Image (cartoon, rainbow, N blue to C red; front, side, top):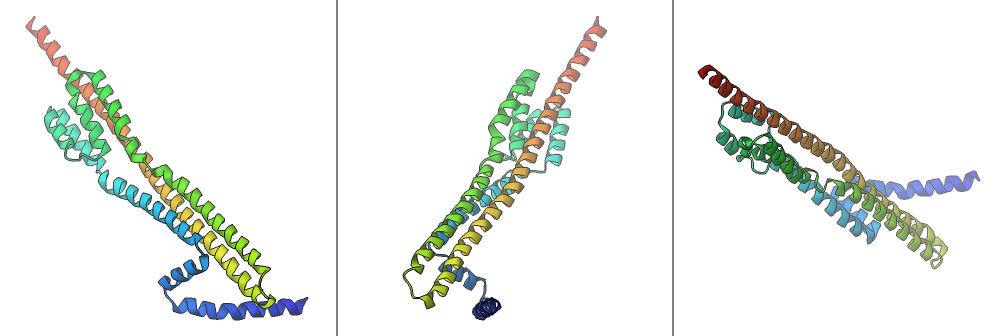
Length: 250
């Protein structure tokens, strides 16, 4: 049994040597072109799901990291200073300087209703939270579904490639079977590798954006609660001097 195994290993090494030299001499573009040629038509199906995944990742990156980005600490500090000094109109205008930020929108909703009482402030803040915070996590869950779809599409491409290969093996001479089987396995592995690579990209992006979105929503809710408490204390402070003045006058 050792002689056939040794001969088989020698053949594999002999065939793999020139291919490896060609891959090393070529660039990434040559590798991609060769992979698509060897992977068959299902590689283009995988390519479609890669484009869809990258579109979702790009849209969430631009939205969360650019459009919704706001220095929450300095923003809230400035708003609180304006509220304590009684400049509610300036605080509202200050929030209007970041019209896309969910934090600025929620805080602005509370400030607009600041003179209507604690209950109205709470209702306005709650309504704004329900309206704007879902935009933060929108389409993030798509990435998990895209990861599953890409994996399954890669496996379908693998199965289709293997089925076509084994069906063709019965119709070719014996000396061509080895090359045909090698090409079929190559097609199957390229589809599997491409599908799993897309899935990894989607899962990593989902982990990042899901964590980022949760932190942003928690930050908005926390600062909205702080604003409600600040406005509540502000209202009580305004009432106390008025009562004391009445007692002093009597």
